[in-house]
Image (cartoon, rainbow, N blue to C red; front, side, top):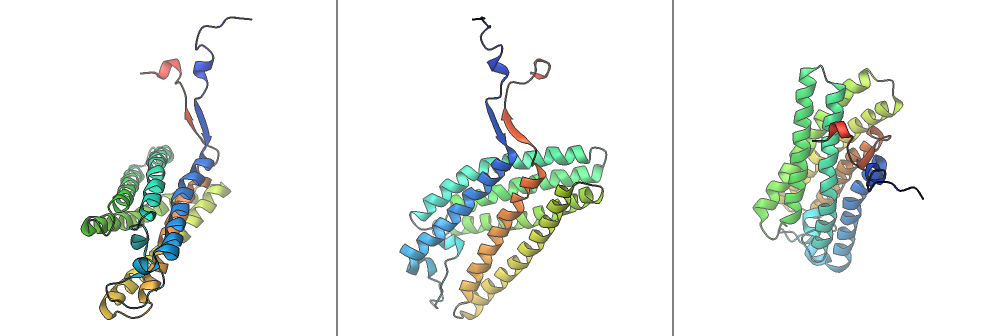
Length: 254
């Protein structure tokens, strides 16, 4: 048997090799399954607490904030988002590198790419903040996290659609064209239901009508689900890519 110096062959093999498509599915499924579990558990075991409103009018669905503030729902949600958030930072960095490669000689697009990256980070930080500080612990902090998440999310979607409109304009790739169309549709869908949710929330607090908070909760679900779907478009953007942990070539080591 031929003797080989320790690590001379195996050291250069990737330690981890994961298709980006699989990472995208895992990253989106974590909050999706966590959200479904929290809402179902809240309806089954904590219905009165989850659907209570300060107006004390009939309400039939819990808001997301109410569903994730109960026990054990809060721990399920925190576990899901804790695992979900780390890949989100990785995906944000991947998009920044992608945009820099596409717009290497265009200053305005480079600046827009940097802004989009910062918005992606801000959105993720807002999500972590509203997750780990529940509404019945410190409401003002939870509310700030929610506003940061929604605001960053909408502007991030807008900037992303602008960048992808430029990519699609000069692209012959069917995947890139489909990705842009889906992003734009999801952005419009998300923005519409954000406005509708804000309307129902304002109306509930002003008039305390039966069922209005239920409509707010339903719109809130659609806002969050469309946000997840928007991020899922990375499935097409990086379909042929892989996430790897490997030893760099000799000439590229620092």
